[in-house]
Length: 99
Image (tube, rainbow, N blue to C red; front, side, top):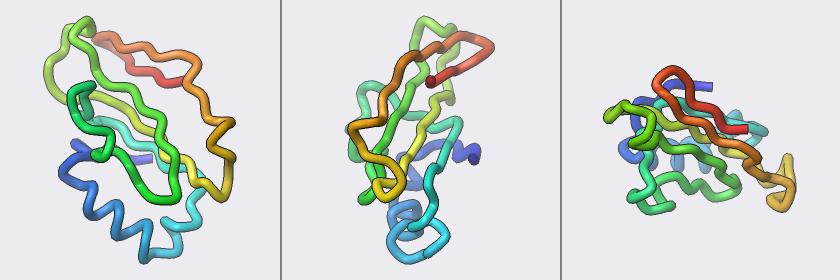
């Protein structure tokens, strides 16, 4: 788990790490906060080969304009992509939840 303070500007680094570092290749789940992903950003900003992504973006309704967002990257070797489901998302001034 890590606070990345923006996934889009770290995508190249995450791709390199998951391709070349065994610890990242074999990681079952990677969880990031403060992803700063938006519904307007292309899905490629949060795509890693060998991982399925579940994410929740900060919404206008939360009352906050900057930052926010959570993303979970699940290793394909660990879990079948058909089993990954987002059951609930909540975004408020105080909490962001992806369940």
